[in-house]
Amino acid sequence: MSIPDYTSEEFAQLVGSKTFCGPNAWKRLMSWLAVDQPFKDFMQDWTNSIAPVIHLEVAPEQLPNIQGVLEHHFDHLYPAQFILRLCQLTDEKRKHWLMTALNTEQQEILFHWLRDSQIDAEKGYIADHWQEALNADEFVYEGTPLYGALTSEIFREISKLTGSNIKRIR
Image 1 (tube, one colour):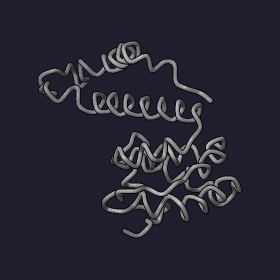
Image 2: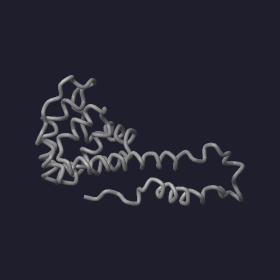
Image 3: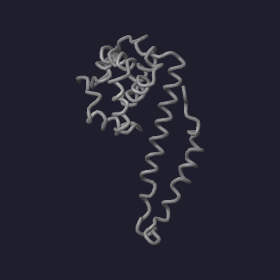
Image 4: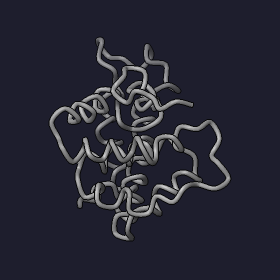
C-alpha cells in the first residue's frame, strides 16, 4: 500500500470513522504542517521510516528498528497528536512497535491518551444511541423530548464512573 495523503478529505474521514478525533479536528491538526517546523521535521522522519510499514496491508514478520526516531518528536504537541491518532488506526503489533520506540514516560502518556480516547469514543457512542430503544414520538411533551434533559446528567455520571475527569496532561 502506498502512503496516503494525510491532508486529504478521505484520510480525514478515515480518522473520523475509526478514532474519537473528528475529521475537522484532523484537518486542523494537519493544517499545522504549513507553519510548525517541529511538525514538518517529524513528518519527514515519519514518511521515511514509519509510514511505509504502518500502511502495509499485513505487518511484516520483522518490523524495522525505529529506536530514536519518534522519541524527540513526541515532546512536541502536533507530532504527539499525530502518533496518537495513527496508533489508533493500526493493528496491535504495529501499535506496540510504535509505542516501544518511545521512552517510558512517553509510553505511559500515550497509553493513557489511547485509553482516554477509547473511553471518549464509548461515551460518544452512548450519547448518539442511548435513546434508540425509546420511541421518540411517545416521549414528547408539546414538542419537547422528555428524556432530552437527561443527557447531561447521564454523561456526568458516566464521567464519574470512567474517571475521565482527570485527563492526562503532559
